[in-house]
Length: 474
Ligand code: NAD
Figure 1 (cartoon, helix red, strand yellow):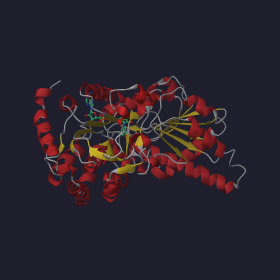
Figure 2 (cartoon, protein in one colour):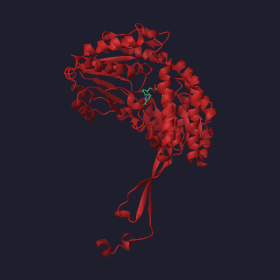
Figure 3 (tube, rainbow, N blue to C red):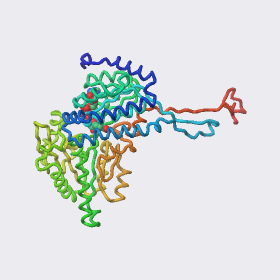
């Protein structure tokens, strides 16, 4: 790798950060608060710079940037500021006769100097959300944003340089050579967001130093849609309403999240053979209302991040057994890197599109005889980051929760668990290791130190040699 071309000195950066951490300043509640407040100020005063960067990298619609990037980051910051004292407080625990008389507590302490490597698809939020956890927990941090979203990477480097304590919070820009150099250092935690191939590289590098990792990866997140048979018993108008809400929420999670370039976007839909035509019809109608008759020209649809990903997605559509299954969309604008919302019905299981994470605006629908069969389809597959179910059936909801393993589950919506700070966000199996958001972010960057406080009283001699027969009876 062209490590010599890197414009920073990794060991020097580490040394500076280690010194800052060892000075103890990052541990104080005042420092943590001041840094979190500085982040909020930065987001407020430079909202337009951030929006411009996101538009330049992804032509992200402004509202999506405001809600899903800046809004989420601000919410995380505010939760951390509000809860910090409670999170930092030692947690008292009950002790037992084995240590009587004593008291016990769990004391959270910062891990030290940590590395955050983020991805291009939510380049602002995915950089700052983990950073907030790292700072709240009292660590010194290096953030390495993605080179695939260069405008946001550059704005983060500039603004964090202006607003943060640069002795303890640094941004290193760059791609593989820079990240490789960073990974050679001894970190106290590495927090990586991206694909599983690089996740393995990160984990292998971390293993050399016994560094713990959080890996926020992806996968093929399914949406199971129950047929409206359960709804038929209700008023017809309620049926129509439920179907409308279902398709709107699928669309919001797929095309309304960066044109499907989101880790928790629905990857494919499973529904019954009988219900599929009705679902496809409802999706088409609602998509036309949202994005018009010529969606590639819609300003409300993000573009594909770059031509590599555009070609990758085009290839998924080009397979003969897949292209013949398009029932809506399929239009592309190569000059503007836009792909229309595209629905495919009954694509074969051995197609490329059903065997890799789509991460774009293509939505295959596969069909089953009974909705309960969906669980059998999911069982042998890798565990996804999220799984969704739309139904009104209590038993089906219970079966979904007990049968389906994924990073997170949502019933009757998509992606919204991401916005709930009281829930951990992370994967399982191929979709990742560890979790964050809210208190879980603080925990991800803390060591929970066990502290036992013993009294000098009641010093039982039975534990001391010589181990006489009398003591053994005791
Ligand atoms: P990416 O290309 O931006 O890569 C992520 C990071 O890895 C970047 O900072 C990049 O510089 C670094 N990197 C790339 N190659 C490397 C190498 N060989 N050695 C060391 N570092 C390297 O992002 P991506 O991987 O295309 O992101 C998309 C994937 O991330 C999808 O699978 C998606 O589901 C997943 N994702 C997960 C989450 C989550 O929160 N779980 C969020 C967003 C994306």
